[in-house]
Length: 343
Ligand code: AMP
Ligand code: MG
Image 1 (spheres, helix red, strand yellow):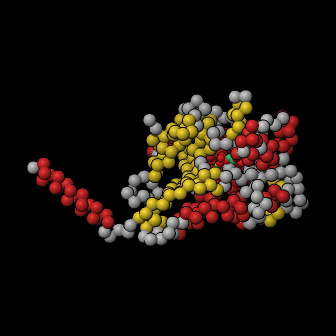
Image 2 (spheres, rainbow, N blue to C red):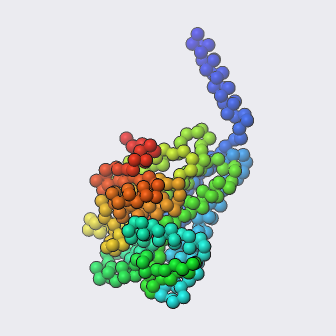
Image 3 (cartoon, protein in one colour):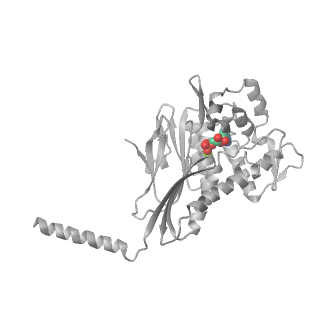
């Protein structure tokens, strides 16, 4: 009898395998890890048929955006030209791509009551945030003097720039820094690219702390996006279980920082003080249908903290999850259906 059962089970398994094989195109998984935009790019893409993997195209798309548009360090970029125009009476004509993004940044600045502000460039430069990637710069780090900070803050504030039609005018000394939205903008472009390619059936692509999920896996299982535990970045506080296209962005005090005399100085500046934001939050994760929004909101909510951040995210129709410095996890009501706590 046992033997009969085994044969029967074998037959059923064989049939199932046969059925998933026939009538359906073979789907391949392609994975890669690279660096671009100063961070790690991880791609997992599912491809139907024999098309070649678009991993290099996606990397080129990210690098092009950085080199041509968003970098504040590369002289080839539009942001570099915008910064170089600061102080000139005529200002500079922006591309329509840049104008759209700058208008969205200004709206986020207004709605976050100034917490999110892409004019923090002068203050970010004073802190040498970009330099912290290099060990020798971390070793010689000293926080800026209060007077230096006060002076740098004079050149910050989105109320000090003007946009008329496509023309941007920045006051002398102002420096834009689009680091808070660059990854989200890139993920929006990547999502459009994925949609154009019929042979791509699913993908999960991360750019540092920002992730896009797209389509589905061949086995029909969900996309799981881990939420890093700020207290132990090798583990996660939980996962988001997602179907189809979503953008998840996390801002945390563990992503880029220096430590001196037991104090951690991180890369998210509170424009009200010029110092790293200190709202009691160690990590913020946003779930949204738009990459720009998820990235901008994660930075804004980190500065605003739990209460005001929750209000802002919900006003944009996004979900938010906070990990406090004390490890406490709180989230918007709508986030609960996607969140699974870790063990
Ligand atoms: P994210 O990792 O997306 O939260 O972005 C952090 C980056 O945004 C920093 O490295 C800075 O380049 C920039 N940034 C820092 N503070 C602010 C702020 N208050 N508003 C907008 N951008 C900021
Ligand atoms: Mg951001």
